[in-house]
Length: 293
Image 1: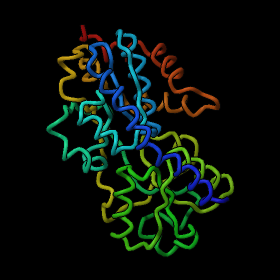
Image 2: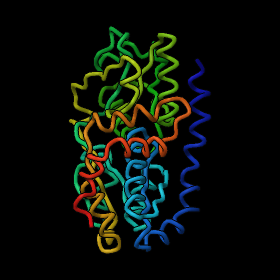
Image 3: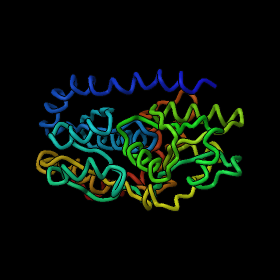
């Protein structure tokens, strides 16, 4: 399994995100001014794809033209604070803390849309002798002294770098993407090989493979978090119905998990899956929209 080659190929694509953003910000800003236009910024993680597309479908049903823009976390927060995006979903209070703190007075936090998240280091359950982050130091060679991460701007990457120092692991954190990390993990599981990755809940990988979070006795990753809906200043005045829907948007692990599973089926399309999910769950949609006239 050539982990280095697979990761380096995907990383080149990830790092192009900044260039793509600079070319689209003007269009996004123009759309944000229109009362019937909404721009959702998201990072291409499993949970973000699910929430973005579910909201896109529901807002379109309410008469909005919705643009979903995939960005790195840093550019996503920058675009929101500058009013070039209308909405993002944020991991708080820890993962996105360094992005949120400088701009919290420039955005509106509409509250939690998902509770009970967790992030940390994950290994296959067949790694019987590795149950804590402390254990990694003694077994580092088995993992090629490498932790497989995701996109370099993600909050979990910053926290993991700090955790490596806090636990004195001496291991290298390799940046890639959510998709590449999952692919590398899947290959390792199929071959029953050692691997340690950065991961989080909610994520479809826990439904597919038998995995475990490593205990974190030094609390490097903090306690459980929640996902908050963050919107730009002025959205309530420009698009009150969209603002209302976003303020009511909240779902459970089971509700999101169903869409996560759909998105991981072969040749599936997250937007088309969201359409099917929305059609199947009018009660949930009503919960998000019933007071929004």
